[in-house]
Image 1: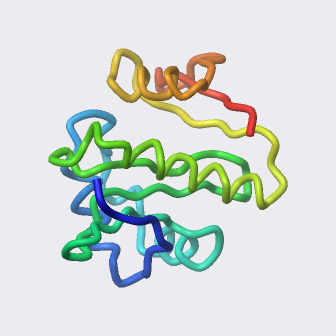
Image 2: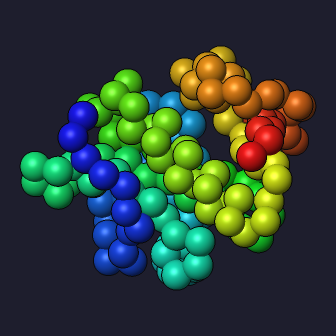
Length: 142
């Protein structure tokens, strides 16, 4: 897959939302839960990372680490482009943001029994519990 990772710009939030709402697992139950203020903060501070295709500049996935608490806030790949290494590269970009902010561990949550669960396990993350919403809580040493 020919592409590169770069920081997203605020005006690219429509494409980021398009990817976020196209996924088959870990769907956002309340679309109003992620606001323009969230996008503004993440694009200005730690960064939302996007995978941009070389040929036409199309964004195929995105990730973000929350440097305030050491969590992975987002990691999503356009379903038509999954299983090509984009997610793994974007996860590393988000983790690097957390490392640079001084975090030594990272956490995230995902629904149990999903491909995402297998993805994080294969990437070396450990399930350490269940959230009040029933999601698996994963941790990784950075």
